[in-house]
Amino acid sequence: MKTRILSLALATFAFSFLFTACQKEASNINTTDFTDESSTHSDDQSRFSGEVDAVANDANILLESTAGITGRPGDLNSLICDADITVDTAANPRTITITYNGSNCLGNRTRTGVIVISMAQGVRWSQAGAAISITYQNYKVTRTRDNKSIIINGTHTLTNVSGGLLINLPVLNTITHTITSSNMSVTFDNGTQRTWQVARQRVYTFSNGVNVTISGTHAKGGVTGIAEWGQNRFGRPFTTVIAEPIVLKSDCSFRAGSGKVVHTTASYNAAVTFGLDATGTATTCPGAGNYYMKIVWTGPAGNSHTALLPY
Image (cartoon, rainbow, N blue to C red; front, side, top):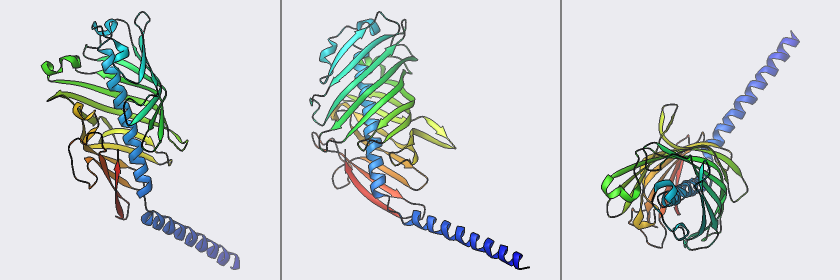
């Protein structure tokens, strides 16, 4: 009888201990302030996606100016102010190699590292469905205002879904490209390295210049519009959904001038709105100044906070 009572007491104690621990863990999550983490991750994702877009823009410029790929010759080394260009159209695949030299001609950031654009022989970039491989080799981008950097390695596929060249966009009205990857490695300024997946669609239109409208194309667990997913620098799994299309315009150096993304983790959601001024109000292109993004995170207990960051 004493043994039974002792066993029952131990079981009751163990249950009480586990129940209390679970309560404490839930309480900790409900009261944790995720402002710093959500702000840092939002900044990381914004910079990563912005650089993927920037490289895609550089690739488009070079693809459309390489005689052995589109038949339109151009002076390649004058097209990208902070890079040297090497072309090999005799090999299979044909390659364009961009070596960034770290100069600050862009004004807000410096770039080093190598990008290799590869396309199979016999494929024309103007063809519908034409696909190229873009490989990042220690592509490092350093932001001049705070000297923070990210390093990207890995490969993504850029596909000309609709066909057509951007030089003909005023006539074609619209051109659609997609960017997909399963192995983009991102190293953050604290040395943390993570692997991110990408699934983005870029639709080009022409209205007083080139406009690019970006949306997510991945779906999982009933969630659509996913553009990136993986682990953030804090080791927390996340998905980023483009809730409202991101719009880039040539007259504002292809910076995100509007749009909204939502970062989802097991501990919080963070909604990020782009294209704002320092007061959090939607604004037109700030010229050489900063746009701002508003980050509103919400925890499982409804606890929330708002932050405003320049980009």
